[in-house]
Amino acid sequence: MDSRSLFAILCSTHSKNRRALEVYDFDGRPIPSGDAALEQKDAMFGSFFDLNKVKQICQSYGLRFHQHLVFCPGLKVVRITGAMIKHPVPCNCDGSLKKRKRSSPMPIQDFHSTVLKADLAATDRERDQLLKDRREFRKLNQIKSYKSQWNKGDKDGNKAGSKTSGETISNNELYWLIEKEKEKRDKINMALGNNKEKLSSLRRELYLVGRYLREAKATKASKKPPAPPPELKTCIKKGDSCFLKAESTTLDESLLDQDCCYGGTDNGVVTFTETSKFDLAQFQRHLKLYNKFQCLETLGISKHVLLPRTFKITSKHIDRGSGQQKRRLQLEKKKKSTDLGRQIATFEATKSQNPIFGATTPAEVDQLRSVHESHKQQHRDFYYSNSRCRGTQRYEYQRRRFIDRLCADERRHISNNSPVLFVGDRGYGINSRIKGHMRCGGAWKARIHGRYCPVLITNEHNT
Image (cartoon, rainbow, N blue to C red; front, side):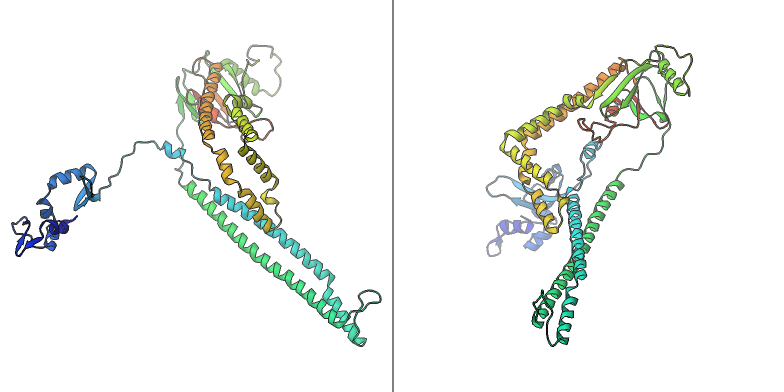
């Protein structure tokens, strides 16, 4: 309800020259019509409502009163509408939620690009087959042979060439044979033309999809903040925790103590990490031996030569302790015991036996694509069921706890106090495909250590 509607309801004429209510403006003059009431909105609403109270209610919701009310039938409240003032909201978060949100890897465009590549390869093979057929057709050259028989028959008195020994072909039969060969030739040429047009369109579409993916990756890379300027060397003191390069750090004198233990970690695939502990004198001894180019005559047997017992971590240990092995066995059992699991196992076996790049024609590409896209709902219901999602949460929590406990045991093996860990920057065994070993490589364990003690990355190319 606005001011004109309010005037029509409460100030309408009941008899001649008389109104139900007389409303006056701020100058004391009566408001005669709805247009005048529309011009004097504040005076009209102020005659019936407490505008200070209305504005106070609007301000409590972040609104501004614009002389407009909405009455809800059957309710004892009135909705006050107005323009909302949107103020900037101060944000104190560190952006960790945005970091956890991963942008989509564009699976749809990637799958479309894969299908286009397979279709292009099949069309290319079809073109090669058509070119081979055209070469065979030109090699036989049946049209020229039939025409020579036609000309020979005309010279011999309208006699035709021979089919076999003792049989002759009339000119009428030769004519239809020549027309049939011409039709076959035109069919091959037309198929080649259509094939070239399809190849051109597929290459154009594949180029556009690739350009879109490259632009998306470039846009994503451009949003990254610029690299910070090189900093000065950081001095590592007792009780500090960091994950830095050894070249950009210096050790405080309080750490250069004979009682201080140092840990060295070697990364591998079969044995994921192997950590040894030694003191400063032993560390200097090994550096001295490394700088020698021949065996020392007075080497002897000392306590600094033999390394102490190492702390080994294998990928199977992580697989078993983190719960990943149990989760994998549960999935295999579910595939064998449930009807849906058996369907998924059969479907996955069918997909592995019918790769999309094994197609030789575009029709086979469409057929294999329909095979790969079938059973999508069953696949989603099996791998993303409620029980499996809950199990994923439990597995992530158990893996995080196990890895933290494992890293604590490794630090405790080196020293009961806060150790200083030196970790190489090569040979992490990332994405290893050795059979029977999990792909657990990476610098994630060193980063976890860096939250509790100094971790210095050594350049293995120089050392």
